[in-house]
Image (cartoon, rainbow, N blue to C red; front, top):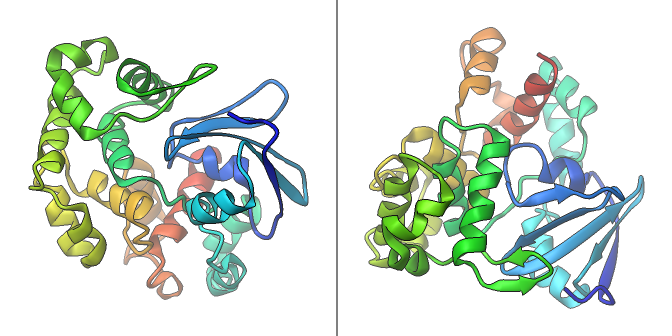
Length: 269
C-alpha cells in the first residue's frame, strides 16, 4: 500500500468505523492508533477519521471516486432517509444512537462466500476463517495483506486445499458456490439486473444458501437496498416491535432500515 497516496473526505452522515463494524463486512480491523485497515476489491486501505473528516490512506481522488465512493454508498442521501424514518420512534432511536452507518457495496463473490461462512458462526470466527482463506489462496499484497481469492482459485484448491480454513461443514457450500459461479450456473449479471425475488432464487441454487444468506448477498453485494435479511436479531425486532412487518416509511429501503435496527438491538440487549 502506498501511504503517500491519500484522499480527505468531509463527512456527511458517514461513520466509516461504524459502517465497517456493524456485521456487514469482515475484513476491516481497528488498529492500536485508532485507524481502520482492510482490503476490498484487491486494494489495501487505511482510514483515519475524526468528527468532520475521513482520511483514506493508500488511494487518491481518482481511485476513491472510482471504487470507494460506491463502496461507501456516498451518492445516496442518507439525510433524506433519516427524515423518512423519523416518524417511527424505534427507527428514529436507532438512527440517533448510531448515525452514519452506510450499506457497503461489496464485491459479490466475496460477499457470497463471506455470508456462507457466517452461518451459525460468531464474528471473530468468521473473520478468522476469511483471513485464513485469503492468506491461503489470495494474492500477497505485502505487509500482511491479501486479496480475496477468485471462485476459480477456490474451486481449484478443492476440499484438501480448504482444510487449513477450519471451516467445517461450510467447505462443501463454499466449493459448490465456487463451482456454480465459475461455470455460470449462478449468473451475477442476471442477479444484478433482476428483482430481489429472482435474484434470491438464483443464489439459492447454491447448497447451503437459504433466504437469509441470499438476502445478505443481495443487500451487501448487489446494492439491492430493499432486500431484508432476517437473522435471530431481526426476528426478535419483528416479533417485539413490528409484528405486522416493518413500517411503511421503510418501503424500498428495508435493508438500510434493518441495519440500523439490527445494530441498535444487538448493542442494547
